[in-house]
Image (cartoon, rainbow, N blue to C red; front, side):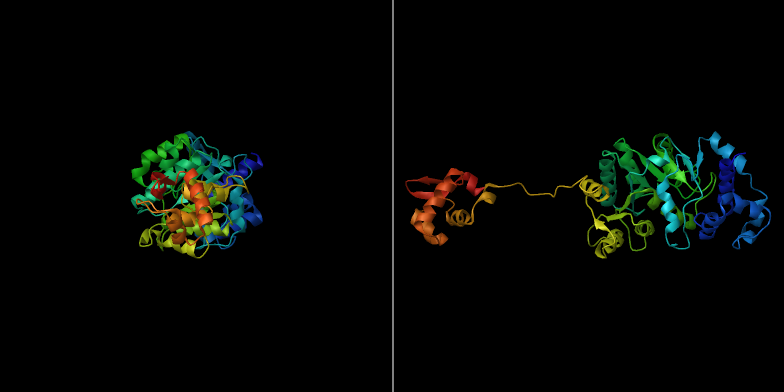
Length: 378
């Protein structure tokens, strides 16, 4: 058995023994290595106070059988050192713990054709499970537009914003990654079984939990650091002040990745958490895909053109010509001297401006004097 396979078996076993994101395990793996840590525990040698907690489970472990069962279901286990390992996750080892979760995952179980080392150019789109129609529409449209630019969308396959993000990306024919708080062989929520099946066929479904594992509140918190860790940046579309999406936002900040927020109506409780992120400067305000691409792109790579109102003929006028134009009557013609007095300019200057304005089609002249043309009135 080669060292790589031993390391893989040890990581499968350690994943079964403890909860994902346990900082004690992360620290011990960094210090001893996965193989040595697992051997010590198997030999009843306590490390970091773990033995008492895992002793009952040690005898039931069979990591080789876990890998075989997973392979029969089309599930692979990717670990650091593999060509497919997404190296951006390693930065989690240098982040301060959040809600007692920390560290890069021991490995990732994956189901789907997309390779994990290919998801570096990606954004996480997260938000409320109780999304409004506004939030769902924004998440879906934003996801659809970014995948058209070869940027993958990562989310957690939950109701609301997550679902809209995945569906938007898939509808545009782009890649999407679902990160679960349970085994990748399980559909959670159950209503998303078809969605997860489709992602598993066209994208990739990922979890640090072994197949068969059920979701828990703690595992959702651990899952959020994986979502943030895989992505170049995170977009929070809707999040109330106690939303789980703010946990993902917090991890994004700790990783020094790009954090963006989509504003909602100021009276909307589902957007209150996003507004707080924007107000404190933690998140950059974004409203559409072009702005997101500008934020995550290299300097000068995807510059977003600021929206402008259509240019009108009046916009090109000099101050003097605009002053005279404002003095020209709408319907009843007036002589040049009358227009000059109203505008507060000299007669010679007024006549020069009227000639300019006539050439632009903004005013018209008759034997009775000057008045605005149809273009000028518009």
